[in-house]
Image (tube, rainbow, N blue to C red; front, top):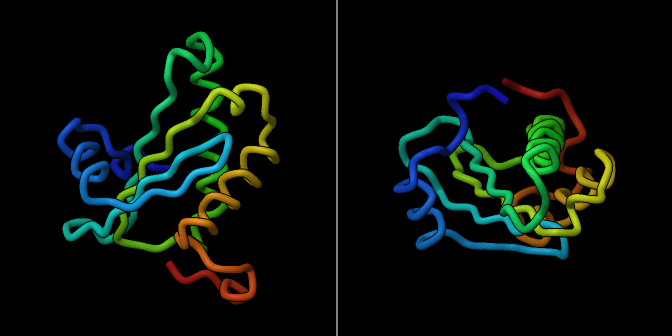
Length: 123
């Protein structure tokens, strides 16, 4: 995921929290909001210090970024997303993180079923 497609400013985070919708499971919470300015999606990540030390938190963020990169063709464009990792995410591997994110995205109607994305990826 390219750095220019990340949410970094506190104002952007607050806007998504206040005006966006959320979906959650035991490992992740995802807030999403329609973005007027961007032609692509942007993602902000949040991993609390309660989850683990810096090494653990950075590992979780790397796993989330890679899982989102793989799920990108199925995600809605022109959206701002905030992904918050909860404590159980610290003990997960890549495939578990990807499946958990897929589950919470389906719950939040961020992506559809796999039948919708059966075709070539247009970029």
